[in-house]
Image (cartoon, rainbow, N blue to C red; front, top):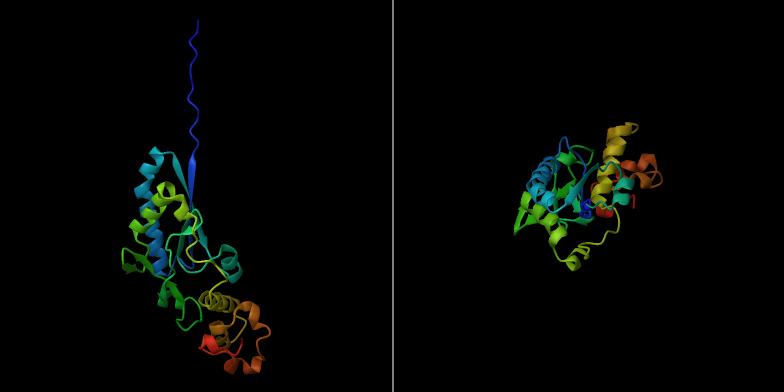
Length: 213
């Protein structure tokens, strides 16, 4: 009589989705540094996740337009999400000269500042990323369900950035006009905001009182 071989049921694989969204990986040290921190954090948690049957699915996205930012609910660069949750929590930013140089924005581009254990960092700390991944797997589900900051629209800071890059890449307008327009008008608004002859006075550096709006 042949002994029946019992095959244990397959253990379902759990997956954690990690997204990295950014404006640039060539010039911006905040983006490149956060990318490096993310790689280090994933290597740190990988052995433990493999033992417990958890797989990490990593997606990196270059956010290149206002419409893409809106579709992705992108509020600041760089952004790391674990299962759709922004690991930074409260949004905090400071001026980023490197991203300001990527578009005709007169250096007026803000990038994310990461706050961890009471200290501010220009690049995401490895420990913060590790805590977010492990917390998503083993933490309190009720805490994970809370959205830190509801998304309404693409921030004006990013609208200026994308408008400036779009005008620069098109190369269809004089430099002075591209610089002025990028400071206050999104590409959707530029068509009818004012007459071309009045563009210099219509669009100014004060985005709060910009004549385009």
